[in-house]
Length: 246
Image 1: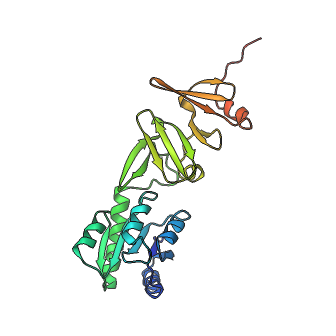
Image 2 (image 1 turned 135 degrees about the vertical axis):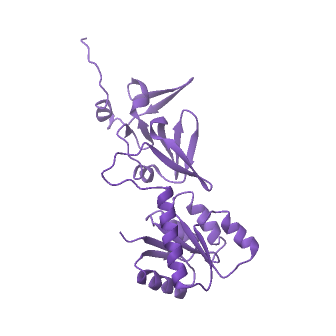
């Protein structure tokens, strides 16, 4: 399978040259962004295997700022390109833990080696399960430059709040920069059900049902979650409810 690469380069001639070289090496170039805004818009729509980012790009946010924001939404290796080898710039770049840091001009052979190493090291650290494998028992969520593991069984529910979602567990809350639809597209587990526009609930955590409300006990706190009246019958069918006479 061809490695999918996204580039961030504000000089369109250099961007086209990068695309030509990368395509010649057998990689697939998904697209190029010239600034922070274009990069963030692209990331919201596609998921590359690798990002190649020039540090000095147009706009108030440079390549390092852009990569820092991308890391909050996407787990992906990054290779920096720059003609600036000032220690302060290099220090800022290294703080984002890039897979490689190449000073222009660079040799094509060096470029290819760094790309292959970046992909291989990343996949060894975060292996992808085969398509026919069982559903993963956990997810990794971004927090600055780190990724925290959350076991799906520990999640009580996921709550939408505009362009953010909050993952609620018994121990902690995590806030992510995405909407609930975007989160659902990256998350699978048979115990979870979208009970309303605002909530994705771990049905195994529900302790009682009252009308159009689901309740989840969290140690000494009880969460009350309203369910859509249009989804109520389907939601209740997910539980083994004992019917009695009268």
